[in-house]
Image (cartoon, rainbow, N blue to C red; front, side, top):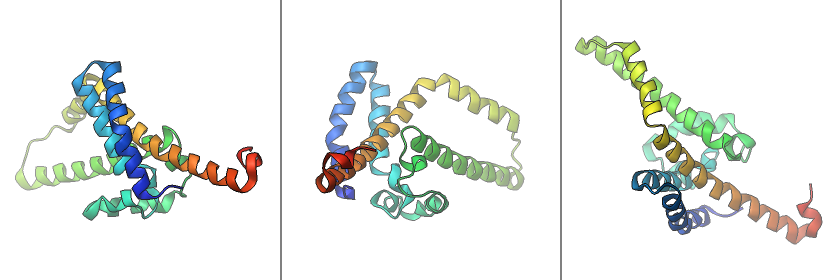
Amino acid sequence: MPSGRTHDRITLWALPIVTVLSFWQTRSGNLTLLVAGGFLLGGLMFGPDLDIYSRQYQRWGWFRFIWLPYQKSLRHRSLLSHGPIIGTTLRVLYLCTLTAILGILILAIAQKLLNLPLNWQALGETGKRSLFVYSAEFLALFLGLELGAMSHSLSDWTGSAYKRFQKQGVRGLLP
């Protein structure tokens, strides 16, 4: 299994490739920026190793405590943390849920303390409409996050397979 520094290098060296390929596919600077930014975020801060005390976890600084329930509930290198699409989806849902709860609490407190007239139904409708209007942008960002996470997971799997091959030969690669 590669070190945190190796994972960072893989992310940084692969960034130009991801950027060129995403621009070639989308012909859009905005979508390319979202894919490339998501790739960097997914590789450096939002990757599969948030389930352990890792470099990615440490980069969250003062906010790393939000990942403690995630760490306690998942086994390292499980399908739920390192799995293709599943791991990234779970991390996005986890972070969005925490952010939504915090946002709702802040809005509820502000509504009571500042006597703000908030229409919760209209706020929900605006959020849903944003998901549809900006669906290509959300998809590009998610794709970037997934590519960053998969560069991490693929390097883990490749490193482990290479070590098994060195110890057991071809039998180490077979199920």
